[in-house]
Amino acid sequence: MALASQSVRVSGSARAFGRGSVKSRTSRKRRRNLRLLGAALFALIAFGIWAIWPDGSKGSPDGPAAAMADAEREKKPQKASPARTEKNPQQLAANRQTTPAPARPLPGSGPGVNGTNGQSAARDRSSAETKTPVMQMGRRPSETGATTPAPAHTPRATSTSAPASRDVDHPSQRGARVARLIARAQDSLARNRPVQAREAYNLALHDAGATESDRVMIRDEMARINDILVFSDKVAPGDPFTRVYRIQSGDRLSKLPKREGLEVDWNFLKRINNLKDANKIRVNQSIKLFAGPFHAVISKSQFRMDIYAGTSPEVGLAGGSSEMLPTYVRSFDVGLGEFGSTPTGVWVVPPASKAVNPAWVNPRTNERYASDDPNNPIGERWIGLEGADDNTRMLAGYGIHGTVEPGSIGKEASMGCVRLADEDIKLVYEMLVEGVSTVMVVD
Image 1 (cartoon, one colour):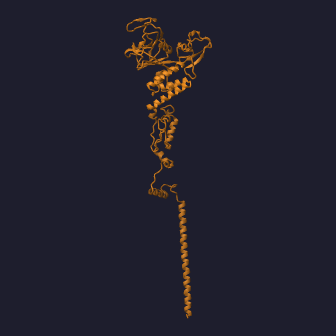
Image 2: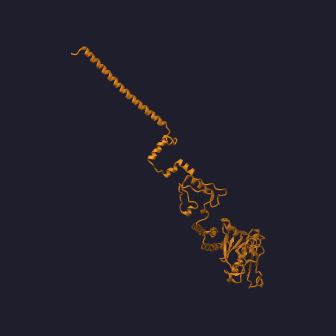
Image 3: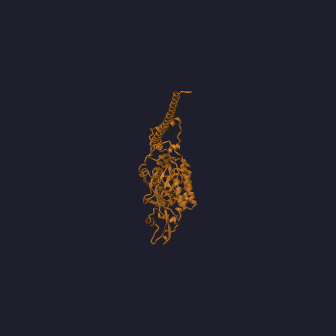
């Protein structure tokens, strides 16, 4: 049996042991709660810091987020897609800084200067800034069949002048242009539009891309068209050279050219209107007027005289404008001076220089020929020429005339003058006007 004192001690020890156990559990629980609270506070603080810290994609490129992004890119390098790079505003800005902007066109480089215009210049500037595929300079879609994109990474060269490809066409392009003009002329003829056909043929005739065979064909076609537009009494709609005139009381055919501002001989009006007697025109009679003037170009190598209407050839061919081009009418075979003695250069038909059935004195033999002498080498028409440029101004005695030697046409047989067959000189005589018409002799 235990002693009381012992029981008491045992009971006290038990109580002490119980109290120690409770305190130990409470302390552990409190520490665990503190750790949980600390963890929660740490997580809350970390979340707050993460929430307010600048994002690398939006903040400074030197911030932590950017550094982390850079580290990730270094670990896993990736190739940027060209399309994505183009859409990146920062990259576009960098491209604009490193790519020279096209220079502004100089004053006067608008429409019609060096083959450029304001719209094409604006397209070039827009293409250079946005790096979109652009059409190859100096080519049209109709000529190339497709556009050629320029490399997006290659800066475009800048220039204040048009590319050389616009000024100097490739031979194939010139040939294609002539072919299109010929096709346009043939289409106009099929639609019964002779004026438009003549215009297209004329552009092709003067085009640098036309071959000699092209020009032979074009001259033949235009001569047939002009048989109607020029040498008949028909007036076609839209013809810039002709119009209908109604005879009024007191009119005389010989006075009409001056009064109506025509630069043709009145005998030419008589011819194209098939008038048998110029003095028998009647009031209210409709006739065809031709404005003129006519000019001639003589090719020594081809023994050929080409007649043009409108602009003087030495002016029109140098002007470079389609509106200034002389309009081809007809060609004639000629005879020229022996040993190449027909001088090249520009001549004019001076006043009072034309004559019908002229008398003539041979300057070498002093032999005289009467005006009606069938052996007169001058024939029945004479058109005097006066020098009009540095090559011809000091020369005298030259002219265009008929011949009693038809076999000399196409040869060098005269003393330097230009010979035409009898029927040809009669027509040319009526076409060339004193004081107006020019004659250009070329090699």
